[in-house]
Image (tube, rainbow, N blue to C red; front, top):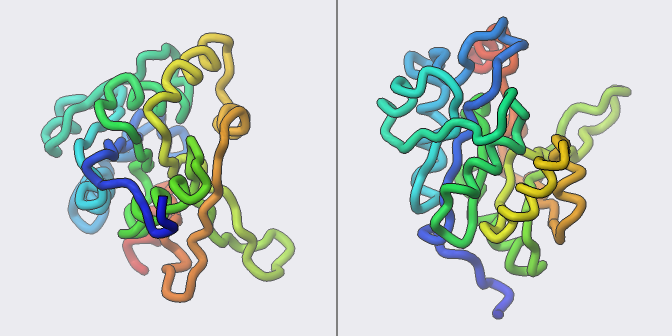
Amino acid sequence: MPAHASIASADITGLLLAGGRGLRMGGIDKGLQPFNGEPLALHAMRRLAPQVGPFLVNANRNLAEYEALGAPVWPDSLADHAGPLAGFLTGLEHCATPWLLTVPCDTPLFPLDLAARLAEAAVADDADIAMATAPEPAEDGGPPVLRPQPVFCLLRATLRDSLLRYTAAGGRKVHAWIAQHRAVQVPFDRPGDAPDAFFNANTLAELHALENR
């Protein structure tokens, strides 16, 4: 394949992950919290929709409210809120395209070229998974450090059986499952990349701070 080859957006299903328990927000449904006057999930959906073909939402409560945002909604097929991998698995079980792109509902400013850059890297490396990395403040106050953003993942749809086996055996760690496959990390630290593109709102205070930026 030529170096500039990529994956057509129509071959990527977008998956919005909204199935968490929102424990750090006091147990409220994070994706339905208002952000600039509209549900947080709607901002993420609008940002992702132009980058992909079909679109799905993974949610475990308030299903009608999520359906009202305009996409099919599927709850976890695994019991007990098994975390992001439960969402990945649900997406892969309902994915009719060769690729699935996951984004969380609490990160409304992620890059508009997320799909394109992950796809380009997946093709260039012949990878099964392409995962975003982004600069985050270093804990020692030094220069920012590139950290994986494991819920921003482009996955081959053929990984469903592998994830089914991993979760059936009790596996719940995203990084441990990804490590079983050919994966490429894709840095979002080019000049012009927004430094807060992957800032996620885990608390209501963080959500309000994000609104006021």
